[in-house]
Image 1 (cartoon, rainbow, N blue to C red):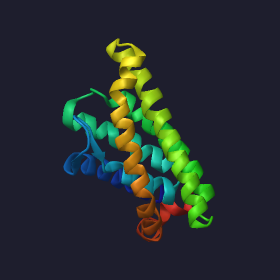
Image 2: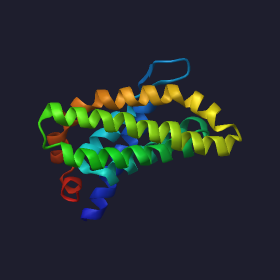
Image 3: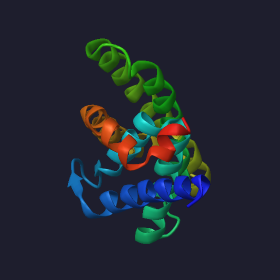
Image 4: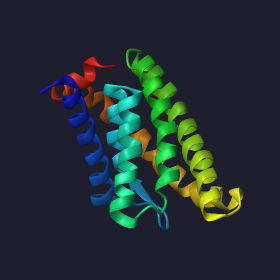
Length: 179
């Protein structure tokens, strides 16, 4: 199989895992919000395979989930928010993965919270305020719970990223080469 085809298939596996974990393993946290376990897949792809593969996994995984569950409702804002989160995480992980664990964890945690705030509270809220014709402040109020749940899931994913890094490179060497 050609390298390009292998890369497409490897990213498709990440997209499918994001959607499947988001659908099948919903851990309720707040009223209508849950820990989106698909974020663990996105984080691993950002950590092991770089920003672009993490962005594709997170944004297209969110789109696949939304299309399967409830049509386009919620998808554009969530997908665009995941572009911001994936870009920030991929860029940061590439620079911190070779640092000592305490320093890397502190930097990664700050970037996770900041990028999730930017992606969910700002980008997702702006998109949804336009789509639903609601005030921006109302959308931020509704997305605060999603921000908290998503940030917690990404923070919990940090040790998973470190453990899965070597395994991911063995499983999809063509993605690891393309970084």
